[in-house]
Amino acid sequence: MSNSKTVVISGANRGIGLELSKLYAERGWSVIGVCRESSSELDAIATRVIDGVDVTTDEGIKTLVSGLADTSIDLLINNAGLLQDEKLGSIDFDSIRTQMEINAYAPLRVAEALVAKIPEGGKIANITSRMGSIADNDSGGRYGYRASKAALNAFGKSLAMDLKPRGIAVAQLHPGYVKTRMVNFGGLISPEESAKGLAARIDALDLQNTGSFWHSNGEELPW
Image 1: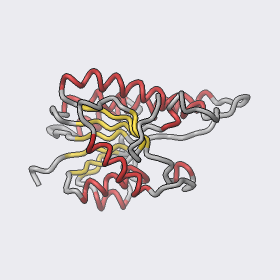
Image 2: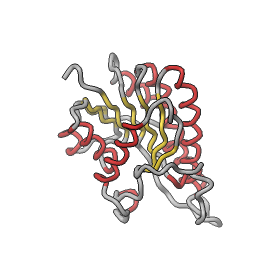
Image 3: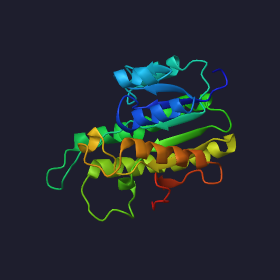
């Protein structure tokens, strides 16, 4: 097991994060699940769980870093996210602020805190959304979610450029419209199908296509 690769997954206790944990565990990877509160499903799969972690706070990041002391990370998957809805005329700016903290700032915090543990050849996958595409927005609304995912895409692109000389590749990945609690299970594809697609995109990620924005089905998405 000492030669196995290590993946760190945030928001690993349910939904897409849990399915990614299952997938990499089945591949024989050492899976470290990060979450605020673990689940029995994650406990049964993960090599290790670091819970009680709020990735939007300095304290949470310190807990995460100390929990990963002496750990080399081959793949970091920033998966934790929050979807809320705002409509023009009744915009809740606290809601937008919270989504920015969770969807955009937290992945950047985590990446910056852990990048020293990622060796050359390592990868970072930011789970974003095509709703973060400005070119693809033809329905409006969702101000906080769209803006936070667009910000995550911008952060991810900068990370890709900054980390390329260090041999670390970064991708922004849209999971698809997935049947999870986030969308009241109203999606089009299963979490399992999404996880397989995301893993295929991560497998194909290298320093030539670093910084790209992909759908889990392989389609390159517009910014």
